[in-house]
View 1 (cartoon, one colour):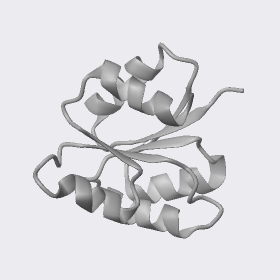
View 2 (tube, rainbow, N blue to C red):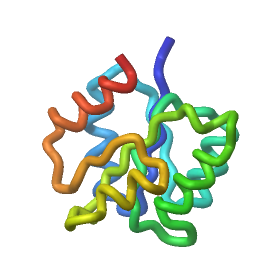
View 3 (cartoon, rainbow, N blue to C red):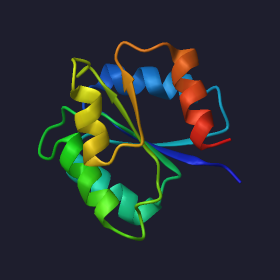
Length: 121
């Protein structure tokens, strides 16, 4: 069965990079451009994994993650923060919000795929 990944990213260029990367895999890719769209997509489509940008319009990635993880029906979905927030303490802040893992931008495509495969073998 095909695993679904929700890409939550407001920058089209970054979504395209992830579409290209994940297009070489068996994963089905869904997209959201802000935290509110992410919440709606998660509720409707139940992805197997979420790649969450932190700096988003309307509802940031921290709050979107907190809301997803607060729902008992959704909290088991792994969320990987993929963000340019890579200063000291940013990873801890993402994990405190509920992110299961953290990948700073710019990232190595190979490393990101390896991280995804840890959660979706």
